[in-house]
Length: 436
Image (cartoon, rainbow, N blue to C red):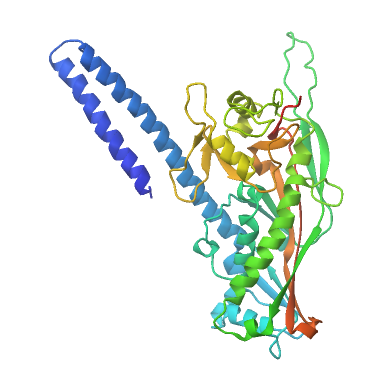
């Protein structure tokens, strides 16, 4: 269903069209050409129609992205199929749906685990499950909506994952997410150079132009967080323990994982976005002087951004998962940038929750992107579906009453394993700040 914004734009377009049609009908009825005044009005109305067509298309595309976002997030979160497992002697072996069928409250079970009540396990694992668990691949187009519970079901797994995504621009920009049961190395073909066709004379052999492939290996790096909670807080039934622990663990794990997805060097961490693309930047700026609207040196110009956009080949540039990614302060600078006619290159979103646009493409902020500067890789652009993120198993959540016994604190440990890399280095390019 179209949003109110789209409906208003459509109504305005109909009104403008009727006014233009009235001019044309009047001139045709009187069998004459437009007067100078009518011609001017006709041109103005047609110009407005073009602008409205562009805005309506942008709004509809954004609404479709949001619809795909919700569907993809539902597939990733797997609410009805999330498997919650416990330690020995526990009954946490069935799916959430099974608990619901029996009238049991999984959130109450989790609260019992947090409190350490008799019979509850000391460790729980929250899994996403969909058919054969080892064979899952998810395409995600995920965005933060301010409150994760307004988008996803209210349970611990969904809350934690939504907070993890919230702090990472790469995770918001639609990477391909692979969820595997085991942590063994996962090998993926990685295109480094695409082959080009060539002409040949009649009867002559066609020259070979094979693409160049390497092999990307996705490992299972561990990310964890210890959260200590006062016993009094646990015993207070009015406290939203699930929300508190999900927020603390999700953001902490997301900060560490999100940072490596951007800047990881690929040896003991993921091969991050900057590491994967820095060898062949799409555009390198000119002399490291402060561009118009920027206080920092090495900033991009309008021409640099246009060159960046066309440094990515058309299939990737036109992909629905093609995004700009930059640090928050860089996005702020881009909002002040104008084209050669003085028009802003940044455009606010017309749909609540959808990302803003830069040169007609969505832009998200990632706090781990380098700041604008001389020789800095400060802006990324391209098809983020070619960035593969691997998540291994579920979220492991464990409790210890002994770690800080003297302070009467209960310690919780949250563990997640994952990796990420860009599998096609032609799909995403970065801007490199100019040097002296």
